[in-house]
Image 1 (cartoon, each protein chain N blue to C red):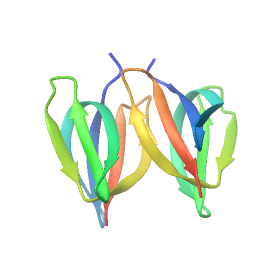
Image 2: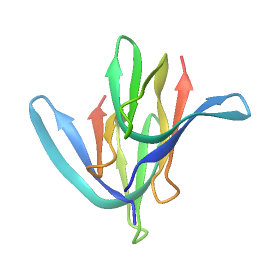
Image 3: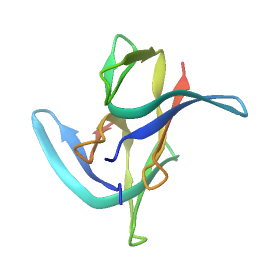
Image 4: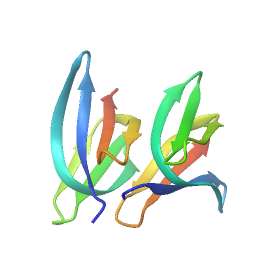
Length: 62
Length: 62
């Protein structure tokens, strides 16, 4: 499976907010993350960068 | 490997612009895509959405 871990960048810090993320969809000025277990999380911000071979997605708060 | 195909959304169309994408990094008001073969491509826009289990990354032109 090719899901990824989602991190929120806050200054110099990276906080892991969800593992096994499948989809990241824009919603209400932010992004809704859904993982392979069907869990959902909302981040007010945008997708900042991707490192897919490392299974990492970075978001940045707005 | 967990690289993805990158599509640019233009209205109702989705154009495949690169396969086997590893990293997507912000650069100069857009994004630089690098695939696992080391090829690079620049998109003036932002990352719109992700569907990682489907190996798809969608960008939107600005």
